[in-house]
Length: 153
Image (cartoon, rainbow, N blue to C red; front, side):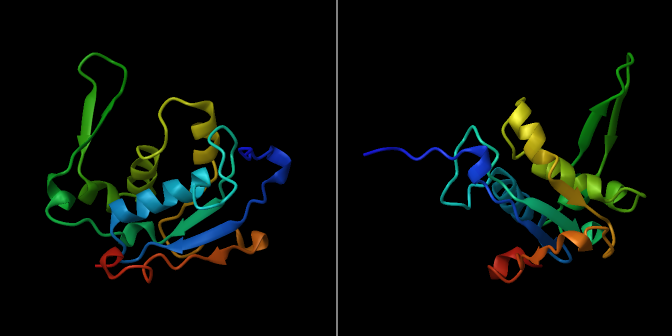
């Protein structure tokens, strides 16, 4: 018995495109984190980047269940004394940068404080609208909403 360990040269990275319109945020983020890490592939090796590139469009139309749209709070700190800032998902989704909600959700489902996780997170591209500049990479459509009826609201 020998355990297979993938080499960086063995990995073939695909480009996937996911439409986030009407999709539940937490379910989307967990699946995207799995795709970025490469856990969906049989050659998954924890210390090698075996994941795919993921492009998410329509980030402004993502859904949150329950009362999270108004009650969930994202905190950040400016670095200055008394510099704690907070924002709700409702405020962020209506701002010029609606993709930050998805980026934060995926980032928090990746392994923490790791150079490998930062590299894997660099393969995530999120766009608020339906336009994206990655048509030259010929991304495959990954129909996440149709995988499970609970994925879409």
